[in-house]
Image (cartoon, rainbow over all chains, first blue to last red; front, top):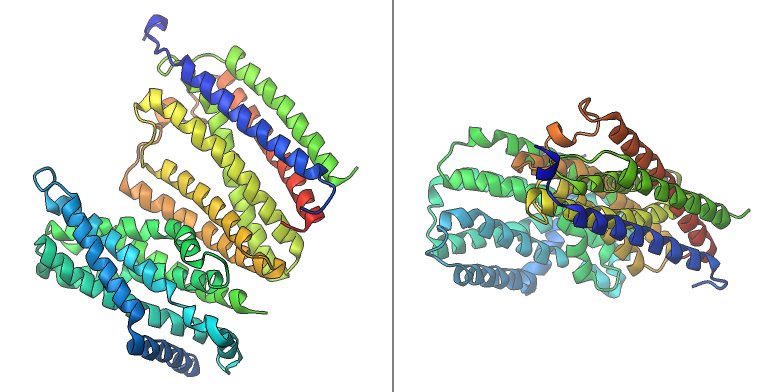
Length: 41
Length: 226
Length: 218
């Protein structure tokens, strides 16, 4: 297979990298806020 | 050991008597089984897929749902009048209690499954009688391990909110291995293949049963200890 | 420094390293010619699956230890591991289909590994649901431990049964991580990503454990 025959799948890569980052950063923020809570929740 | 079995039988007998008198749980499970089979029958296009391809799945999905319904009743009787505490104070071991409950559950599920199989034969015209003996073997093997886990879990969820919803949620992953194995074996049986061809699946079922009956027996005391 | 603060430092550090992994994977790792750019999802998907399985395994071990030793700290750790495992499972289950769609032509299949990871996700959820439904901490700890142990024992059976049923997950020729045919650059990116995701697991669990300590609502 030559480079110009390579399938164009970049969109999926971008989506996956973004989704993963969003989930991990969001969970970090959630934990951060729960860790800062002054009173028992 | 003799005491263990005797006490277990006493517990099982109590549950069986209770259910025999009121028959509510068994009746609902049987009606449910019949309804599920009817829905499956009308939900399929007879010209599209041959019944022999669908039959094992229909049979086992029906058995699974009915099995979970009967599990719901496992510790329900003990909810009232602190009957569970009474049972725990009785001079029997926790293992006897668990095995008694397990035997009773298996008896109920057996009744529902046998009836379900008869209705299935009636509705779907699948030649079951030719392979009824190995089929019964598979039914037993696929059910025992799953019901052991189910009995264990029902002891836990009985005291939670949404118990009837919680039990299927927790139990469904545990249904997967016996369900796949049972469906595979049943497919081969209906296709007229000999049991020797499915020995791998039967070994898997046996391993699952041994593993989970043992595990459930060991873990049950943790669910009722104070 | 409190546990929460240390956990935060570890997490932030791991996230920064993750950014580094992103750059390395996207810019400095060669593109696989048969799959195109989508193959790079690999460097995020596989380590997140590893973290999820690590979470499940440690949850199981903590459950066993709790039932034997009866120390609430094991229960607290198990609860933390369950929640963190759910997050990593979510990453795994979203990046996986995004990879599968262009490569296999389908968002999902029921092969051994996919079914196993999906069931693992359901087990995490079931574990968290059970904990939410029991108010007494002692009872909750015991019930959770029972479920955790049963779940751990179940995993090999699920894998075996579905594997016997059908196998479709990537064939070793193209995508086996340790295959000598993979260029060193790819292997290094993957291994580095494994390390970062493990560090991230540790940071998350430290924070979640500390939260459990503080609220006693683990």
